[in-house]
Image (cartoon, rainbow, N blue to C red; front, top):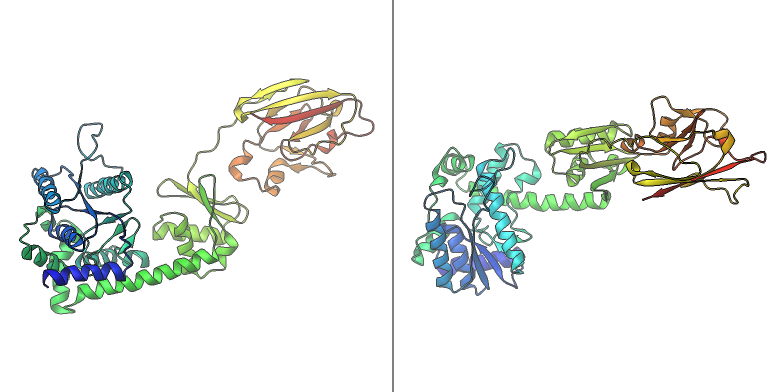
Length: 452
């Protein structure tokens, strides 16, 4: 492929795959043949570009790579951006997260640098030098490691802010383009280390398949990735229309009845829209949503939690149980500060019945003599029972809160006002029927809950 044909192929890919590049493009250049060809091709197409290079500092000659790329930027007359790892707690070098490989840590740091650079300079597109060979290797690698449809869709040609203008070109094309322009790319020696799966696939597996089964295996895999990506997008649109995810308090949730109406394949896809779960975790959450009861929950990888709340599947960060506020004796009459609830209780004793009576949710009116003294505000206890207003019999507090659809983790800290004879008011719910104000009431106690 001649240089003009290479450049024309890049232009064709950008147009055909809708790589909006009306503004400046930040070209990520390592110094290797792919990224070097990318920068020169974009420049020949007269796209306004800037060049970014991230020096991982993992090899003795990494500074030479950075200097080489900077010279290329000077040669093209474009702005150059150099990034290096932020110093960690033990000096220079990339800080690895828990369970993160060195390669994953380097990739994370590199992408962060590219995205921060683009944001700082108001650049909407970041171009990387991924080729059709990279696509084929990715698809095969994910097939070997057990990826699903989304993983087998490979490297997306466009995923904001990234574009891959070389995704339809072979690695041999980029090398030939560099030779024709008399460029001398840098070569990373780790690319030949077959201890890494991608390198082994590149050096051993793909050549074996090409020589014995399908000489165009790379094109076949890349084409399959395109088909799967289109189908993946279609399935996503079906799920988005059928199941509306709602955000609340740092979590995402969907109605279990909406999930149950879907095909199992779409159920799994809907669940993965809530959190990045592997196949096993996704299936556990699916079974929970179909067979579990309200209050059931699962703890998932990544410190996530999935639980059922009255017809909703809720997925979000796992949290510990809320601290139980200390009990406090109410000041009658007066104001009692309740720091554990971030609230206060105001109480008034009157001789006459208020009109209208409080609704019993944020405030209530009690027969002071029936309620008795002292009154204490506390959290629920095992075995708590009372007679909810309007009922002739007793009911457990646990059943009252469950019937009111109070989330399980909130029930433990529901404020309860209790006297010598037991519960007189479940704040936010009901008073005890035995303490209601009647025509024979002589002293009325009004309690008002105020959030701080």
